[in-house]
Length: 406
Image (cartoon, rainbow, N blue to C red; front, side):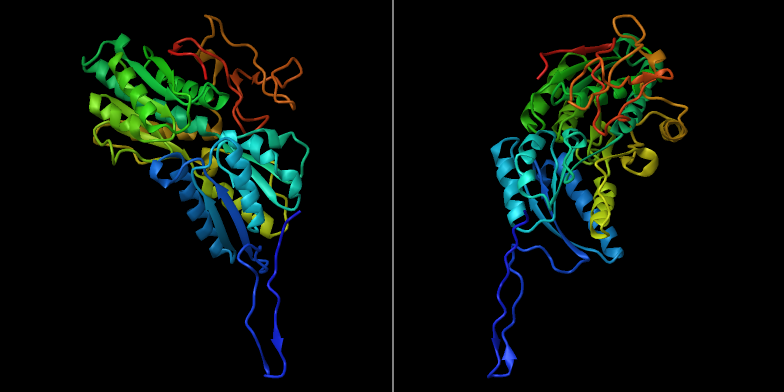
C-alpha cells in the first residue's frame, strides 16, 4: 500500500492562533491537480543521449501539463543499475510518496516487478519493456514507440549519402558498408538496425552492414572503441543503438559519416553526423499523467508512431547531407503515415536467400511458440502491433554480426 506520513497540526487555542503545519516531504500531494512522479534513470543528463532524452521528455510534459492546470512534482533518480539498486530505487520512490513511478530502462522491469505488489495504489511504468502487458496486474504499464520508423528514415539519409559517394566515384558500390554499434542482441536493437539497413538499401542497393555488440546500454568507451574498429574495417557510415555520443565523435575522428539516436549529435560531430532519431517521451508522459489526474486508466501497453508525434527526426545536417535528402525524408514520412511504405516489407529482404513468409510475435508468456501471434501478413512483418515493445529478431541477409550476441 502507499505509505503516507502526516505532520500533526498543533492548535494553541489559548493564544488565539495555530502553528503552521503541512505534509511531510515524503507525502504525496493533497491537491488533486498535483501529482508526484518518480523517474528512475539508468544514466544521467551528461550522456547527451538516452537519459538526456528522457529528461527532455520530463520537462516537455511538465510544461504541457502546467498549461492544463496540472502540477507535477518530480522525484528523479539517476545512474540506477539494472540490478538490486533498481529494486531499492523503486521502494525509495514509493516511500517518498510518488503516485506514479517510471522506470526508463529495459533491464529495470524485473526489479520493478519485485516491488509493485507491495504498493497496489501506485502506478508503475516500465519504458521499452513488455511484461506489464501480460502480467495481470492493474498497476503496471509498458510504453514504447514505433522508433523503427525513425530508424528507417535515418537509414534512408545514410543510404542517400553513400549513393552520392558512389555516383561521384568516391567509393565503389561494394564499399557502401555501414557499421552499427549495438548494445545487446535484443529484439529492440535487432529491429532498429534492420529497419535502418532496409532504409539505406531502399536508396543504395549495394549497401551492406556490420554490427558490433558492446554488451551495455551505456558504456561510452566501449561504444567509441566499437565505432573506431568498424571504421577501421572499412565502414564509411556509423550508426548506433547505444546511449552516448562517442560513436559520433569516433566517426568524425576517422573521417566517416554517422547518424545518431536520442539526441542531435551534429553539434559534437558537425563533419560526420547527418541526422538522428528519437522518441518524444513528453507525449507519453503527458498522456499518462493527465489520465491519472483525471481518474482515467493509464493504457496497459502504450505505443504510438511518427504520425502522432511520438517519433521525431532531429534537424538534418544540410552541410553534409546528399542533395535532395530533405525532400526524400518528407516523401518517406508521408509514405509511412499512409501505409504505402512498410518498413519490414518482405519483398525487400531475404533470410537465407528466401523471402520471409512467417515469424511470430511474442505470446502472453513472453516466449516464441507455435501459439504466438503471426507477425507476417499482407506482405510485411508487422512490428509493435501485438505489443508495444519490438519483437523482430530475424537475422536477414546483408547484415553481418561481428561478435557473439550478448
